[in-house]
Amino acid sequence: MKPAVDVVYRDLDSSAALNEIILKKLEKLSRFTDQIVHSRVVLDTPHHHKHKGKQYRASIELDFKGHPLAITQDDESIHVAVRDAFSSAERKIKQLVARQRNSR
Image 1: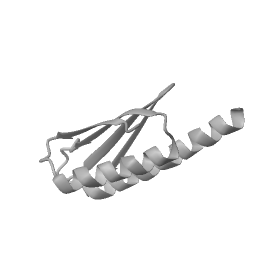
Image 2 (image 1 turned 180 degrees about the vertical axis):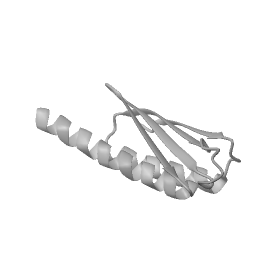
Image 3 (image 1 turned 30 degrees about the horizontal axis):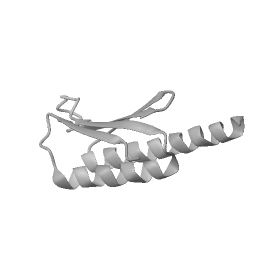
């Protein structure tokens, strides 16, 4: 079963290429577990500090059967923020699946 996916852009123009990358990465996450019910990815520019340069934030919210998982990553490139957020989500999902296997 494919999980439902919402991709939200705040203060950014939507990008078909970025949407495709996000869908591929979510598909990869669903290979680790089939318990993902809903996914929400929020891409925005939260910082308005001129001395730091433009910052982007990628937030991933995954709803599992049992409990939610939220990951947030900031970077100067939206693509790097998305990549790092999904790699962090992958690590957490692997830990969660290993913990569930060990508890059985």
